[in-house]
Image 1 (tube, rainbow, N blue to C red):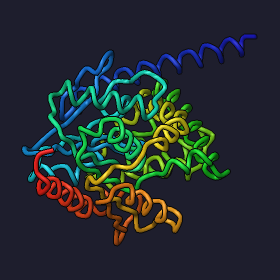
Image 2: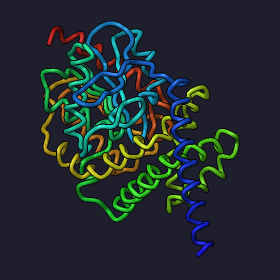
Image 3: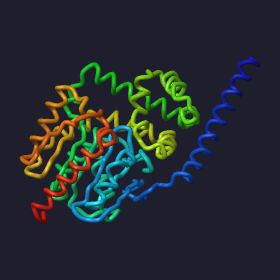
Image 4: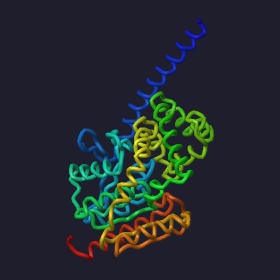
Length: 341
């Protein structure tokens, strides 16, 4: 009995210590890494939006799993040299507050529209999406066609992948949800922050192994989660690490992943995009079936074009930013030649 009481006291002490460690660390991170843009109320919670440059049409960028506005760090400054451009963080990611459930693409689109209106970002818009973010921009363009004059889809996911899931896709989705549920718990207890510290102190292997053991996942799942981090400039990595130790980050991933079939159905129900300029970019590592799907997406506009990157993987805006920049420039210039919309 004394042993059990001692163990219970120890567990309570560790939980309390973890909660305090997380609270102190979060407050410190908020002071060290303030949002580069502004936090805008969209009806009960705030989203972070970061804008720069001047001109029309405005270019708005949405990121993929599990990235934030920082994933456009190589692209946005270059685009700002020729037009107004904004990147933002979906609810729960980056500097944005957590948002209401479910985190379907429909919910995300309505929040993005409220964000642009409340932040005073004037249309018309060229929307740029990467991976999951392409669901947002496609559904936005279909829902508010009068606001959208061009699209750039960066290695997009396809609705069919999540409506008719293979066993591999189902396992991948279940793994991401399981990983993130554990991650949210570990973040609340300060364990995610401790693992992040191990990585920063030069023990990435120990960090990855700790993640896989504590979440019941695999090192491959941990690798997929942190892969974009190594592609960012060194000075941004501590910021991303701080953002990824927040419970809201993992909660957002769970919410978006659980709603993925619903989001896929919402996007699949949309039609074509008429004759607006559209460029679809495929990663060099894309499979034959992915290339075929991307080619079909390019055909959704009579002015669509499909390009395969000469190198790099899924994160084209980090591996081959010049390709993304020039694609956006091409769409913006095409819109300019068409005159007022």
